[in-house]
Image: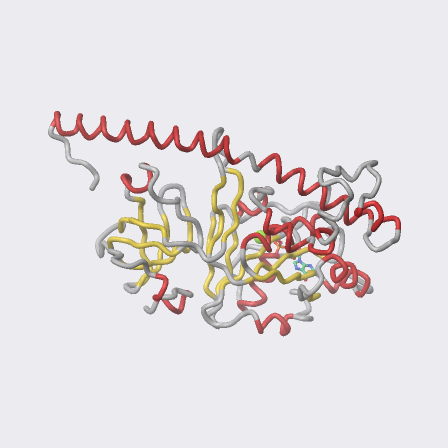
Length: 353
Ligand SMILES: Nc1nc2c(ncn2[C@@H]2O[C@H](COP(=O)(O)OP(=O)(O)O)[C@@H](O)[C@H]2O)c(=O)[nH]1
Ligand SMILES: [Mg+2]
C-alpha cells in the first residue's frame, strides 16, 4: 500500500524522522485504526511522548509516525504537522483546544433544504471552515424536498461570496455529479452539518453502496439520532476520502481570528475607519460601521452576526490562561513520570518503552 493514495506527501516528513508514516482512519477509546505501507493496523500512543506533553494527541486524518508491529498494536511515536484541522474545546475541565479532524482538503458545509436551513449557522460554519485552512464548499441537501431552492442559493451567495454552492439530493441523485470535481483520488473532505440533514445518506450516495447507517428523523423534534459514535475516515472506491466525526457537533469558536477575517471580509473592511480608534460601534460619532449600515452598504444582520461570533471567540480565546494551565499540567506530568521511573527502577519493573 502506498500511503500517498491516502494523501500523504513524503516531502512533509521531518528531517531525521524515525518510524513508518501512517494515517489515522479511526479513533477509538485508546486505540487508533491506521493505514500504512503494510496495510491496515492498530496503534497505541507511546506514553512518554504523548503523556509527557511533547506530542499533540492525534485525531482522525492525522499523519503520524509509528513503530510498526506486524503481530500486534503498533506504537505511535509522533504526530506530523497538520496541513488543516478543526479544533473544539477539550471536554476535560481544564482542557484547551482539541483537534477533531485533520488534513482535509475541502469542508462540505451542509444544511438541508427543508427545516434545517439557517443563515446564522451557515456563517458560523464558514468561519470554522476558513479557520481550518481548507476550502469551504456549501452543499444544500434534500433538494427533492424544496419546491424552489433558488432563493436559498442566493442567500448563501450573499453570505459566502466566492464559495461554491450546490443543491443535491441523495434520494433522486440530483446534483451529485457536480460534486465529482472534489472527489478525486487522494483528496479528503470533511462533512460539517447538523444531525439528520443527510450526511450519511450522501456518503452512501457518493460511495454507491451503504457504508454508513442512515437513521430516520424523529417525528417529535425533527432531529436525527447520532449514529456515528467514533471518528472515522472513509475511503471511497474512486480514491477520495470522507471524514465523519461526531465531535463536529460541538465545534466552538476556538481561535478563529483568521476564519473571521475570511468569512467576514465584507464587514472587516470598515474596521479601523471610525473616528475613534477604540470605537465600540454603539453611539460614538464618526463610526464607520454605523454609517455603512445607515447607507445600506452593510446589512445590520451581517454586522450583528460578526459581532456575536467575535464576542464568542473572545470568550473561548483566553489563551494566556489556558497556556499557563497547560504548562503547569505538563510540568506535573513530567514530575509524575520521573517519579514513576525512579520507582520502576527501585522495584525492578520494566517501563513501556
Ligand atoms: N427526501 C430526502 N431525504 C433524505 C435525503 N438525504 C437523507 N434523507 C433522509 O434524512 C434522514 C437523515 O439522513 P442521514 O443521512 O442519516 O443524516 P445524518 O444524520 O446527517 O447522517 C433519513 O431519514 C434520510 O432518509 C434526500 O436527499 N432527500
Ligand atoms: Mg449520520
